[in-house]
Image (cartoon, rainbow, N blue to C red):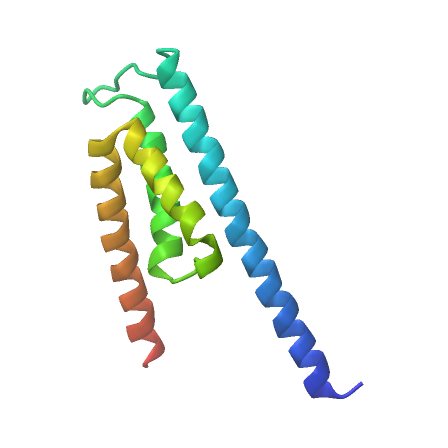
Amino acid sequence: MPLSHSLFDYYESHYASEQIAHKITLAKAEGKLLSIAALRRLDLNTGTDEDGFPFYVWDIASVARELAELRVRKLIPVSWAAFFNDLCRMAECIDKEAWTYFYKSAVEDEEWFLTMENSEADF
């Protein structure tokens, strides 16, 4: 088998593995959001930490960071965009203020990380 063919197969397989990993990230985000929403409806996990923040907002922050990474790094194919947007709307319905703050902050952080990675690659 020619070397170029085996390299193509390797990159195709690697790309497919990354796509599966990104889909799993979306699926896990949906599961976390559904769990947060269910716990809130049952008035569970709504206690506050020592700073007065409800415990669930830290779970929302975690989901925001995961989704922001996918968005900033352009890892959401067009065919997944509706699902991604549904997840963002779901998070907003749980706690709009928390989602807006954490998602915006996560997007800004991820853009900064990406800029730093690109500037280091230039050296």
